[in-house]
Image (tube, rainbow, N blue to C red; front, side, top):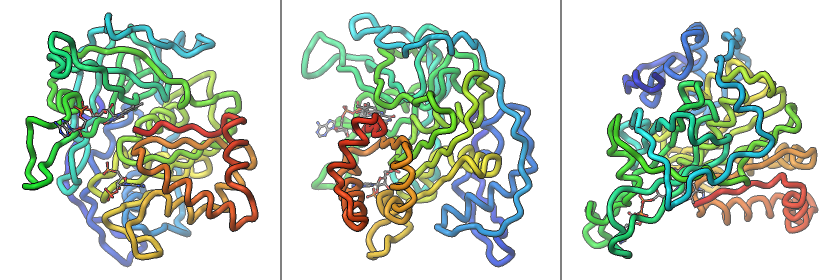
Length: 377
Ligand code: FAD
Ligand code: A2P
């Protein structure tokens, strides 16, 4: 089972023969793929990802491609529908799923806890990549005594086939909402977030009330299998992108053979907070022409003004390429912290002005063409 063998063993690997860097953020090396995974590419994975996490770039490396064999999926009837499934289960009659696994997926130095949670829906709550489920946490809503809690939405981090590739599970990437008293700075568990704590504390076999699936804005447009998809995520906002990338690079989907470009920009606090880094790093090795991966580590790297390195600083670095790709019809997706959008819009506006373009016009064109996809919370 994916994630069952996660570990946090620090190792050191040489990069370009000139340095040794700790590699504490890697959590299991070959647990994300099925038995077909060849391990020969792994030392290169280590080098690339490790260098990236330190803000270095790896150049002139002779890349021996690792196995590109893809994972078999079933049932293929999940490809048949012409429209995405929507609202199959409503708040009044949720589906009762079962927790399969809960794994902490950040290292010890990450500020806060993020868990990868797999839920068994028995094939009864099908969804497409980019959709969300609602979860109704157990217990009574303190604001409406006698009533259940309000539903909370979670982006699904797996493909429609789930992490066990049989169409029976959905995975979440959940950040535990912890409340700190502003005066004492201490945690006040009585005020901690209800649903995220319920999910992160749950155990295999526990029951969970599911609604949905919901959402159309983050669906992966598949009309052009050679299209470009620029994904910008902060923290758990990586979830839908993990689903897209698995569909593009990990699964053998007979009706979707991706030959375009997927470019992931991810902003997290530090190298211990990196999410799913080992599977993304493997795509870099296996599909160097189809995948790009840029990371902003806000608490380990500085931007060119000496401030925190945020994902928008990475976007600025590559703005010319990004603008050209958008002009060529690329889709751009944003998922994660609501707070990132003003900074990102400011950056894009500044870049557009430098290029003598009007950002307002460009944005309205992107929206009109359905190239602009935002899901922030
Ligand atoms: P709540 O109980 O709703 O509390 C919210 C916040 O208020 C918490 O930070 C809590 O600490 C604080 N708080 C609680 N009580 C008090 C109090 N008395 N005084 C002051 N503060 C208090 N989240 C993810 O982790 N992963 C995802 O993939 C994800 N996807 C999402 C997708 C969508 C479309 C949306 C809309 C949201 C998504 N979220 C996701 C956020 C998620 O829905 C929840 O909002 C989040 O988990 C917090 O819910 P909770 O029940 O734990 O916190
Ligand atoms: P920081 O918390 O250092 O200010 P995580 O869930 O690992 O904390 O990831 C969320 C990431 O988003 C962090 O690196 C966080 O930085 C960063 N972040 C916070 N505010 C913004 C913002 N306004 N724009 C972009 N990134 C942000």
